[in-house]
Amino acid sequence: MRKLFPLLLGGTLLAGCQPATDSKTQNDAVKKEAVVTTDSATTVAKTDTVATIGNPRLLFTLDDAHNTPDGLALAPNGHLILSVPNLADNTQPASLMEIDGTTLKPFATNLPVEPTTKKAAPMDLAFGPDGNLYYAENQYENSKDFKSRLMKVAMKNGKPGAITTVVDGFALANAVVWKGNTIYVTDSQWDLPDNDKGSAIMKFSLAELTKGTVHLKPKIMDPHVLATFTTTVNETGVDNGADGLDYDSKGNLYTGSFGDGKLYKVSLKPDGTLAKQELLQLQGKAIPCVDGLIIDRTTDKIYLCNSRENAIEVVDLRNGNAVTTLAQNGDTDGTGGKLDQPAEVLLKGKRLYISDFDKPEKHFVNAKSDVPHTMSVIDLP
Image (cartoon, rainbow, N blue to C red; front, side):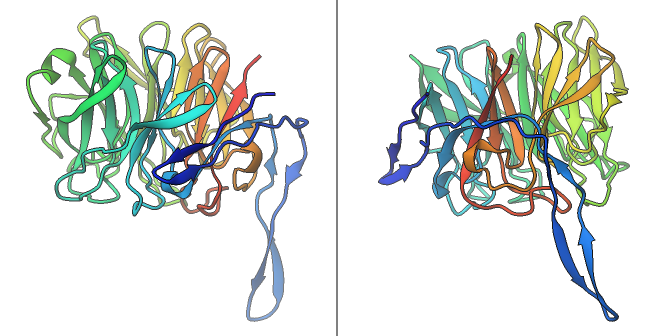
C-alpha cells in the first residue's frame, strides 16, 4: 500500500497524508430527506437519489491554508503542479504546490496579487513550449471589473522564478491549454453588450506574449476571441459559461459550460482561425455541468468534472459521444477520497488525478464547503 507523508508548511502541518484505502465498489444509492414545515402540516421532501459509482481513493488531505485545490499541470520532470486559489476562504493566501509521487510540497507561495483586489487566485495552468509555466487567474469573485489575468512563471532548472502578467483584462480567466505555439484560455464571463450570459475561448501566440503585457478590450469582439458561447441559466442561477478546455487527436478544441452543461467542439482552420463551432449531441446520460476536463488523445475520451452532480463523466468521441459515469458520490466531505465537488482532472498514464474544489452553488449535490480539503485519484484499467 502506498504511504503518504506529512509536510510541515510554514509551521503548520499539511496533513495528508493519510494512506489511500481501497473499498469495495458500491452500487447502492444515497438518499436524503428533509423535513419541511408548512402552515397546515409537516411533510417530508425527498431529494433526488444519488447513485454511488466507482471507487475514487484519497490522494492528499490538505490543511485550512489550502482550502480550495483546483488546477493541475504536468511538469517536464513528471511532477504535477497544483493551483490553490483558496476561493472558499480567501483570507488564506493563494499558492502553487508541487506533487512529487506521494509528497505534496510548496512550489510558489508568493504569488503576485492583482493591484486593486490585493488577491491572487490561480486556476488552471500549463507549461508552454518555452518551458515556462502559465496560469489563469480568476479575480471574478474579487471584482467584476475585468481584473483577471494570465500569468507567467519563469522557470530555470525546474525552479520557479519571476512571475509576471502576460495578459490582463479577462473577466473570469479559467482554463488554459497550449497547442503548439498558441495558448488558449477560457473566459467564463466574457459578456458582450448583446449577450450578458456570454463566455469565450481566447487565443494568444507565444511570440505575442514575449513582447509585453497584452491588454484585452472587454465587452467587444477583441481580436483574441476565437469563439463565443451563451449559457442558458437554470435553477442554479449560474451563468458561468466556457470552463474546461482541451483538444483531441485531430487538434479540435472542446470546452463545456459550467452553468448548463453544454459541450462544444471547436474546429480550426490551418491558420488557427475558427473553422466551425458545434454543440455536441451526447448519447446516454445528460450532463448538467462541465467544469475541468482533459482528453486522452490515444483514445479520444474526454474525462470531465460534473461538479453539480459530484461526478466524473467520460465522453467517448469515437463512439457517438457516448457518456458513461466513471465515479459519483452523494454529498460527502471527501473523507477517504470520495468525490467532493470535483473541479479539475489530470491524466498521467493510467492515473486520473482529481481536485475536489468543494465550493458549491445552489442545487449542487455538494451542499456546503467543509473539511477535510482533499484530492482524489482513480486508477484506470
